[in-house]
Length: 102
Image (cartoon, rainbow, N blue to C red):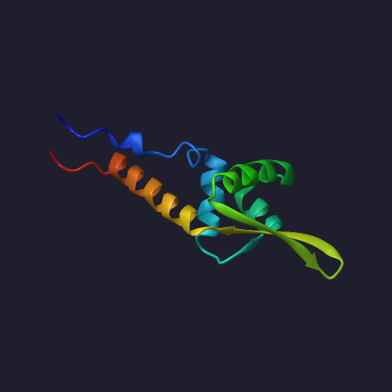
């Protein structure tokens, strides 16, 4: 019997293009301001808010709220679990797109 196809290792939480894009942005920084992530991923604030909540509930990102002067701000950061699962997701994609020679 052969091993299961690598597609079975794709994490359904990360499989959303927006959520995957958010995690990709966050792998490059310690923390990113909400507006920066929204602009980089090319989504509106409401869409990012909904997707960020899903990622936070799954333990993949941390959402921090605060102020810069009197203005409220929100920052997003990848958790260690989020970094691990993002790496596993990329490994599964590589296994799908670059299968070993037979």
